[in-house]
Amino acid sequence: MIYLDNAATSLHRPPCVAEAVCQAMGSMGNSGRGAHDASLAAGRTIFDARRRVDRLFHGYGPEQAAFFPNVTAALNTAITSLLAGGGHAITTALEHNSVLRPLYRTGADLTILPADKAGRVDLSGLEAAFRPDTRLVVCTHASNLTGHVLDIAHIGAVCAKHGVPFVVDAAQTAGCFAIDMQAMQISVLCFTGHKGLLGPQGTGGLCLAPHIQLAPLMVGGSGVHSFDKEHPRQMPTALEAGTLNGHGLAGLAAALAWLEETGLDAIREKEDRLARRFYEGVKDLPGVVCYGDFSAAQRAPIVALNLGDWDSAAVSDELAQRFGILTRPGAHCAPLAHQALGTEEQGAVRFSFGYFNTEDEVDAAIQAMRTLAQEEA
Image (cartoon, rainbow, N blue to C red; front, side):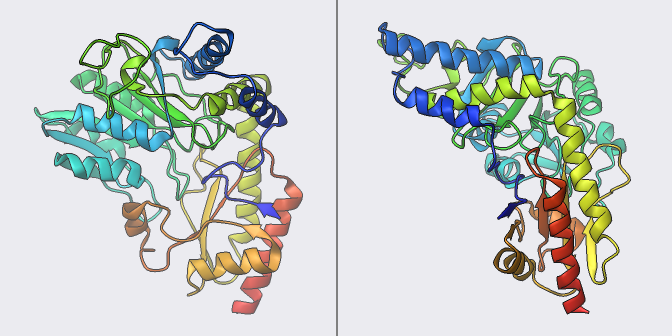
């Protein structure tokens, strides 16, 4: 099996991740729900994860990092809170439904910066999109369909100029791109643990600038102030009702330690090299159309393509059944991006590369696409 669906979730992880989860399963109590050794051990492990997340993203302190089951829950929390009561928000056509659907649900008036036929967003119109009632700018760091990377430092500077909170969806970049919340003037950075961060599924969260206060989606048990009718307002408890996924966060902490040791530059360089090797090997095959701007200096390690008139699901199924190559077909929960590319009906086959993929696997995927292209011709 050759796994090339890393944009959906990482399959191959450092061994230390599973080891940490297994150890936690046999030793960890409930953090903040007692003063015995098992509870304290859980608290220390979760704090270690907070500390490492804060350090990775150059945040505003470990207490400003709150954990959720996934990036979707983090985005819902930020968007719903910051747009409570409506107003105007700015986003882009590259967004995942984890951004779009919460925005639609708020009823806010939206300005959506368009994408061109190569899946690029021109930010020259960003400044003019602001209005007196603009309350939020939210966007992905990189498209999960084309790999196009947005200049979030530029967006953050414009947001700071207008005094508008800036929320970033880092699902596709956390763990391989350097992100500095303070330098990039990001108000809320939302991340998932199971993709580039190489942690377990069921982990994710957000890092919050201290001048931003979010209302929680859920309230309930917190381990403190049990007689108060309102949920505690101090971070991170303010956003973390109920028991955290301590076992998963133990794995995430181990993954973050591995990332620190390996280095983001080394990870990004390898993933980019693999993606570009694949692109160069398939871009001129008969009937193959690749989507995105491959001349860009920075790209997420994604190559989305179609073969002739084949439905993307049929191509992906052929790759899996005949060649043991696992990809992701369809709409990728990114409807506006597919509209920009003109692939609403066909979808696209997404090849996404991770640090643990090899050049031999890439070459096998190229050969598989060559075989399918020859058969199509």
